[in-house]
Length: 352
Image 1 (cartoon, rainbow, N blue to C red):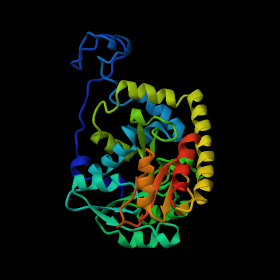
Image 2: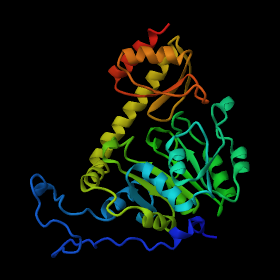
Image 3: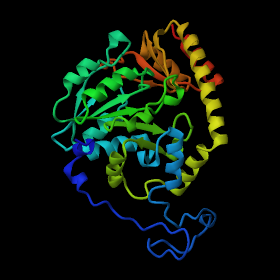
Image 4: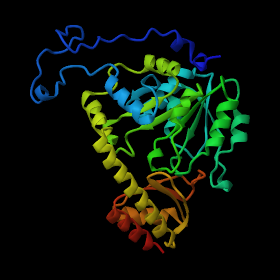
């Protein structure tokens, strides 16, 4: 059975909205656009709609991720991909998605918006928050449409071993779509699994330009999957999803010169991450730090309240977690520039 058969019947039978055809030459009178560009728009052409789907950017992203253009759908950040997948595959009040907390909150949020239940298979805290693959597979039922795996994990920075991902893909073939969120993969020493969408039609890989390519403000990401899955998601994605400035910014970010600059910045961040790890490990207020393969560190403090008060007084914001979660007394701290990191460490050192 094709994995596309798991999609909601309404989506499989959907007649996708047909926007005005692109017109590179000639008189374009099919999109109800203003014929006059006013003010600064004269230079930018913002009186015209962008491509319904940015073909050139799609080709560029496909080349960057090592797949074919038909395996890529450009989205407004990878978070839009999460929403698209849940809306495409999950029927409200019937289907469920599997999550492995602690993990990115938006998976649960988008499921709740769609009226889809969530099945939680917590990471094994006693085993450095590893995925419990056996428990995850046992938790699946006939209505488990989506399985979300975040690697590197947000907020921990840990990775899911490739063999565990392949096991889940194999055992849930034709039953569940496995979504591998690789938002932070550029900071990891593990390889992307994007090319495996050609072997596993139930694999979806999410990528973003927000992190490693430093383009969070443009809101640009990608869903990478089999061509059949991409066609389904394309029918749900809004027309003209990306603005012209966002498309132009993404194309520049993926150019050779800019990619080289991004690689240098990523290497700098990785070095800073390891230095920050060592410095924080010497602070009395720090109880534990998880080795990270992302651009942040997850830290457990002896007293998160005390650290939070001290950092607030110093004008430093970190991401903290509720006491009733597995992340009690933990915080996620983004790696910044050297002087910012030094300021952070100095403030934490001052906590008795």
